[in-house]
Picture 1: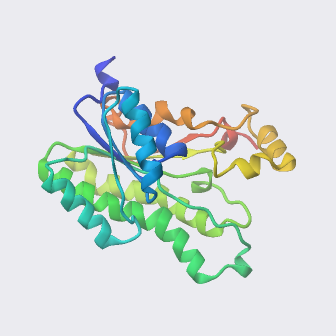
Picture 2: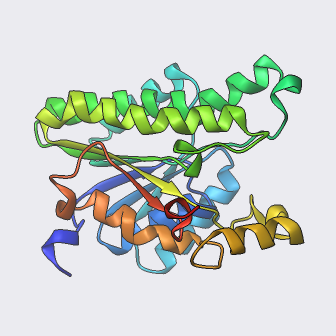
Length: 255
């Protein structure tokens, strides 16, 4: 493996990684040499995911805590400190969707989406960056955005606001932390076929729209994100900061 993409000796924490996009990215980081820490709230699913990686000969472990609660995040990072585990790579992937017209959207549902998709990335990034700065050896923070970091669709206003915020939160992280050797970047996945999006893919009208709207003519797969996340986690991207890379089959490039 080229040293530019070698993650041997690094530890990566990927939130929301017991399945779907998060698991695929965690597996890709592990295959590049990193020890990965999977995160989620369903311990049974986490155990299965860790076992799958270990059975493949990869270094994996798991943690479970609430990414929307600052005290929970602080406690998790203190546990890492006590175990002498440093987080070299943080992937803020955990998220949720809530589809409803804005005129019918309750404030509590708006807030839940914002907290899960945006505020959590700030809280997680703050704890990771504090330690990266103190150690003096830099690090990588990768936030997961969306096509809605750039454009909007009806009925997903809180998700759009959160993912738009991810784009500029990433810029803010770069503005403050680049001087410490921390690269903060984001990935904007297009329409990816996962368990969460399967109902949309099962809708012939929506499925047809995605295929016709994308120059690639298909849905993305979780594996389509692996190359980008490894690049942004690796030395190859050491002078890339504050960027969002859209992995969308070309959807944003065309009218």
